[in-house]
Image 1: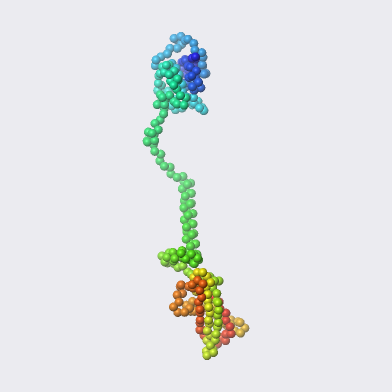
Image 2: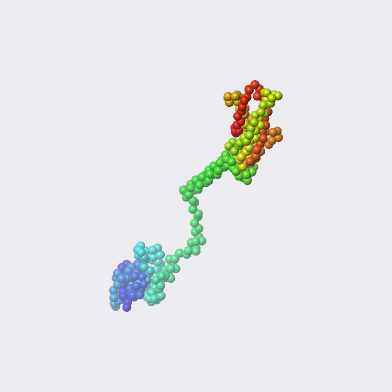
Length: 296
């Protein structure tokens, strides 16, 4: 059963079938003026018309072209409708029926697709977007990160320099590289100086009856550390019978070590050093002494 509908734009009357109306919820395009309208709004039963009311023309389609319904908003018309209006393609009522019978709702009419579908490959070849410059905020963030890394490396280098003695003592493998670096930087890696790990094992102060003004100091100094240490300084205090100090003197390693001793090599770990000094005390009348080990 066929029905008729009237274009609200040019008042042209067309015959439509239920298949055409149901294909796109009644949305059709006028083949005469190109207006898109809903055929249900002016649908009427088919009746015979006089030549004065309706005269089909071979150059003007008698049937409206069914187009896909626009969802979610049927208006405004998409860009391809304007292009279609500029160049309408006339076809007969028989062609409309043939197209409606083979039309698949998921696809677009061939004539419409050819005129409205852009050529993606050509567009991709002609237009190559330029890479965008990183935002200023991202560049600033990377600047902060770079600065923080540089400061961390500087702080680490300063820490290694300040604690190079302890690092070399506890990690001998790293210590040799530190000494090589100091040779280049014109610095030194001093030996550790932990006086608490040094101990006077024994000491004795003897007088010489043949020479009353001379005394002999004998002592045994030990290094309890598991690493080499620098030789310490010795402080000798002579006291009288009341245990009051009458004289005090400090001896550096070069003064109490045997000639030929490598002072720069330091005391070997877990080792002992025997020390003996001959002293001229004059008329001090020393009755006792105190011996102290320290690092200046």
